[in-house]
Length: 324
Image 1 (cartoon, rainbow, N blue to C red):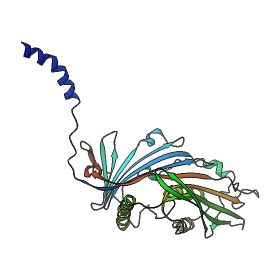
Image 2 (image 1 turned 90 degrees about the horizontal axis):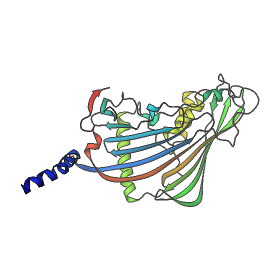
Image 3 (image 1 turned 135 degrees about the horizontal axis):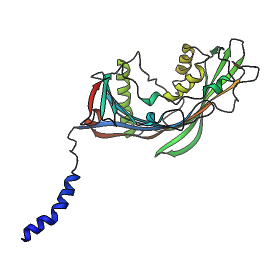
Image 4 (image 1 turned 30 degrees about the vertical axis):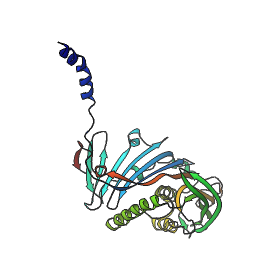
């Protein structure tokens, strides 16, 4: 009788335990993985929208997982704010895009897979821009002049000991009426010495980048250099109305490398300003010179090498896989 009372008394506890049974352990091997978290904030100056984005990449020599989320204050529907995950497998030449809400994975070729929102920025208020710029005007872009100054200032950012550089590219913009403007990309840059842990992680990322470029050289979005891709996107958006794609590509290529800045970029605040009358709708100058057309802040929150499970680079158990 006493034993029966014990069984009855403990029955609810056993039932509760079974309801919260632990998940199956991850038995996949663990291997060194470069983990990097970056954050971008756009202030939305003039015609460019305000947004904040975070990007976490997990990288091995032949595979990469990207987890991306964007939080715009305006310009995108709520459905586009959901975190997005993409996994690239270079050896198999396939990519998966994970739909976490629907628990499904869309499989497609590396070349044909629609890129995640890493490269989608909120649209700006272009009609405001058109009021001061002639839509039929054409610009010729000169070669940018680089200036680099080491300020000697030091600061700890996100656990990194950094030092400051002031960098600027000055570029002449001349329209078909021979009116001139000066565009300036200025960068407040903070860099850190590369530690052993960072060095191993960066080496993995570079190995992956080389392998990725070898496979997708023709259609790759990646461009090596100091400035983040989002700056390219914003500059292209401003100049697309009046400059040729070849001129824009040459401008961005010229800003791809800064040997004078030593160390690994940890934080940069990028501004684009324009002063002058090129492509103005009247004789008044376009741009205010000191007032930026956009300001974008990019920072590394962490960069390290960690042993992580192989399962990170495959759709989770229970996901339905379909061809995209």
